[in-house]
Image (cartoon, rainbow, N blue to C red; front, side):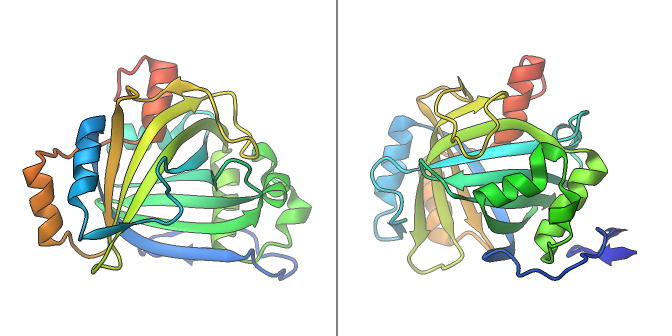
Length: 263
């Protein structure tokens, strides 16, 4: 049987569940655009200062930001990595994402890009339940039979079809800001980006690892649903920001396995 995805293509569906268990506690699907920039420390401070009157800090950020830890899954042949490097217009990746220092829940998230549009489908699960179900790529069929929600079933289907397994961990600290008058607009600053190919347990957020970027640099992202407001476009011009195309996962894999020759 086939199922129609949100962008109109058709693909083989996961087997129908044997029992309709209650879905995990949080499921969300959304489409967004993302603009990325790389800034030095002093430029970050200047830009955050310029946001006053236009945006408010995420209350979870604090002065240092909150920890974001992701374990990216890929196939033995690095299917998702090469889709990005080859510039495919439609591409996906699967990651397990946790927040904070001692997480007990994990987002199982499919991030899909269709040309310039980013689509995310994710489900929030108790960490140990998700680890038991996905079992490092060896999906537990008995537990799978009780899964009913579409985001989780798609993630399980990807695991089986591509023979996915945990491939790379990436972690950083994030400061986030929400626009005061544009509810869909979010601006984030990611610092202290590190990666590790061996520490792949989402229950243990990555502490050490190798530097993904110079520690004096940050990745700034503008995330929006409809358009960038005039005030933010003017700020970007005033601060001389230049767009970059960077994938944290692909940069980490490239540095670790290919000496950085692709990114």
